[in-house]
Length: 186
Image 1 (cartoon, one colour):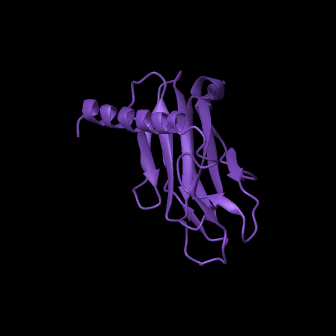
Image 2: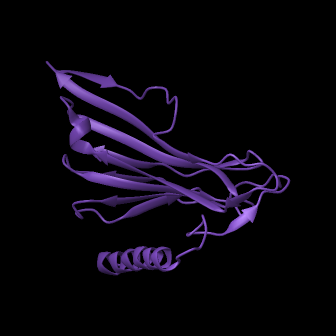
């Protein structure tokens, strides 16, 4: 599919989502999915987890990864602004969706290259977590957004690698993890 058709497809999906959200009125707390009652855990994993990336300057096409896709690497410009939407869902209710960011930086001084990172990831860059008990109403999908500005991270480094992924967890505690989406500058 060429870039033009892909862009039209993504714009159509976004517009339909916005129209359904705006025209929904009093749809309740789950405008993009359905509401279910938490029951006893079924021990199956979440049925989907994705990371969707859009680029503000539109020099790149949108890209995404899921738990069943291949990992993706993208070269970015030094002033790119990337918006990520991480989502995950389960037919019996999603408890948590997390967005993870791992960064590695390189700089060369006097012919010696220094690497900084990746470090240990203590917590996600963004997450949505629902606290519920059996009998409570919850949404089937959850999502979070996160923005990365390459210019804010460049500093005095010559090269940056940013690897992102998402994780969805259901009420049985079972998780699904997307493949990674890697941004490389330059």
